[in-house]
Length: 169
Image (tube, rainbow, N blue to C red):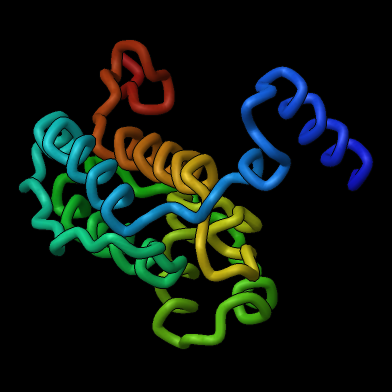
């Protein structure tokens, strides 16, 4: 696996000759980038599911920590919950994995809730990344999964097209 990663870094460098190997490694996402991304999607999501828009903290020019990302996602989900029209099937929460990679008890509780409702993958980088930060790509994956689940829970399917919801008429 390390050889494959090294080959991809070398190929990326060959295809982009102006970049060195150090530049090809993605940097940690900044707090300002995180707030900008969330503030960009929140009004559309809130309007679509009928929730109130979320109020974001002031953006800062420093790396965003995993704990901050988890806390902010958890707060956003709590803001959206009154607009949910469905309850998800429970997802098995691997407490051992969450405990192993997250020292803070509040972060562990938030992650268990987010994983259990399907907003975060059970072994996603948001849960298991040891560095304490995420890259833009990792954050984008986490945000995409969370928003897909928000949209799923905020939508009431039409019983005509969903046999499990039909009354049998």
